[in-house]
Length: 254
Image 1 (cartoon, rainbow, N blue to C red):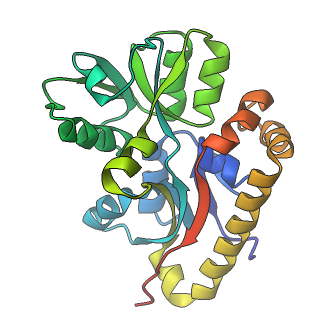
Image 2: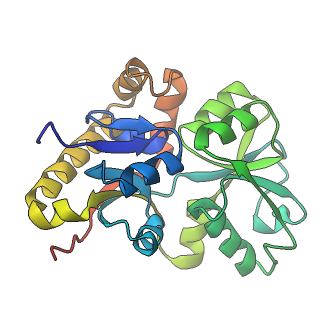
Image 3: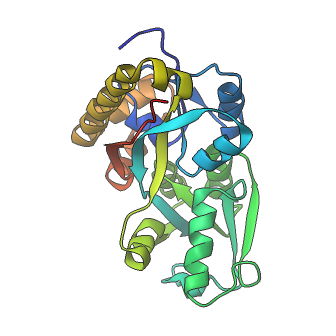
């Protein structure tokens, strides 16, 4: 792969999945969007649902591959929550507003016969996965939606916290398919001028993904060595729950 390519991901499960690749790790989606709007990135990892947002803003990046399927969990201390209807009257903390986790849960709440705007309160004060995790770790959230490896870190830091609902599993039951949460985006001009480069990056991503799934302990050591997450035990435990799987997408060449 051309070493001059600039690839960025967010500090979250995708950074673990990509640990054998050279990629810049950012903390907030807003940082990523700024870099993409300036055309500074050749490849960027974002929620798959951001494709429509990018198009609306005139930022020409196209999905090159799906990366993470599921791996989202409602966590909290109330073990009495067994299903979606048990969320009625509760407050749920999420990263920002209008992100895939919130939108998915809203749909599941609606399909359970409730009104997501009246029956559940969404707390959207948190600008990043890290900020939400830190609040959950301290017990400052009633309920929250976390992805791995933040889930495993929160469970270890706060013994009273539990995984209450597996959003992806509930979605699969309702819709018949696992949701694609995270995708690799390729700069449009690169997709047109050098589509083979995208193929090369996707192949490297696949290799990293399979290695991580097959070597969780070694992957956790590498994640810690690179300073992405320092809790090796939690990262190792998170990998089987993270929903890692690379599926190449279609990049329009014109």
